[in-house]
Length: 314
Image 1: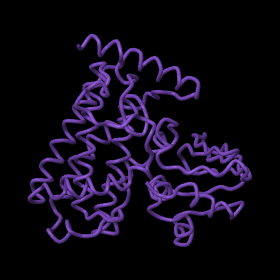
Image 2: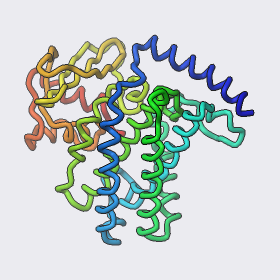
Image 3: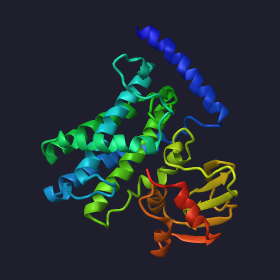
């Protein structure tokens, strides 16, 4: 059976790689070591901060609609468990969809909007299954460390292997990017709700643009304009770091990395990677960020409305 799975997986691999090449997608950029280094340090820090929360903190409304702080961390614990299953299956060169007991959706058939209701209820159900915050924290720490161990043990030739995700077939590297995103954003969702001084982790935030630019991933959180809408370009300037260019044209919305000071666009926003992570995920509006001077906009002011239309939350 395992040999049969490998044959089917080889076929799946070929399809994914060919499709990715047609779209000009790079399956691996080679900075996984930097991401892992940051995540390896982030995990114990997150656990330490969660242990300092009171019971009242855990029942506080988080920055995610309809979720308490406990619900957010229960969701993250489930996500980490699934990601370990995804990368183990990839590293073993097995197609996870071949499991007759699996009820997983075909990749590419779902997006953030179609999954929102299902994820919300599932997180609250998982949250109720943990009797106390200590049990949840211990389980989260265990699951996070197991996933990091799975990534840390990856061989160089395994990072490009195709891996399942409900949004799309990605690679093991892609699941690492998902882990980076989910951990960074949901830590903010939980901890900023009880302490407004908590910012998106400044070690992880500069690494998030690779996630935002990945065409196999970003369909999850972006909304394209109609084909009749006028073309627009918006540059994102992070100062001493490479920036981003967001381009909307003929029903497409592309996000690509740009070298420092090579911007050519209708408008440009100057902000930090931590602030931009909140903007592109809909946790903070661009107009609010401009108002409190966390972000500065030059050029076409209509791009404030366009940005809010493109990125409605994830």
